[in-house]
Amino acid sequence: ICSEKRGRYSYRYDMRCDNAAVGFFEYIHSQPVDKSWSILRRVLETLRANLYEEDAERVTRNQIDQYIDSKVTKNLQTIMSVRSLRALCEAETLSINGVTYRGLPQLQKMLAPEHLWQIFRDDPVCVVHGDLTIENIVCRPEHDDFYLIDPNPDNPVKTPAVDYAKLLQSLHGGYEYLRYVRGVKVDGNAIRFLLPDTGRYRAILERFD
Image (cartoon, rainbow, N blue to C red; front, top):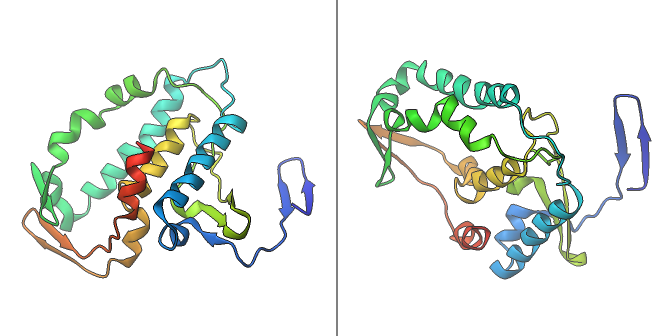
């Protein structure tokens, strides 16, 4: 950081431009898996050492309820209100690219607010990044270093589980690959689409787990 300015409700800063910096997605697909995992491991260690300073508090029921309402309940309502998705929402199972998954009717208990409260209730409260997807990690290969961008400090739930879940959104869910999907075919409860997959995410996910 070469300059900064703090306001009452704001903070601004300038960074020196590094033309060699690349997004972590590009880094993962141009470097050996061991080097990519080394970067991600250091990201996690840095957050644990410098950001996850545990507070004596625990998340409150009100915070959890707000989070579940915005991230689960409202999203499900939006999905289920789309007429073209109704049959998929009502299917007991879905076949996605030949793999069978449980459908929404089988997941209702897992997505129920009371069940989710039991999962989160004992989590520590601390400052988190809040949107730790692969695309929000920037690598500096010439310096064997990294920095993080686009934090989301306004999450109603502030626990390291949010950051770990965001990484799983990338590594397990293939979030960044979805931008390359050009078409989807649906036949009954079967969904098919071409999803580029180099296997790099799976290799890093094994270490992350």
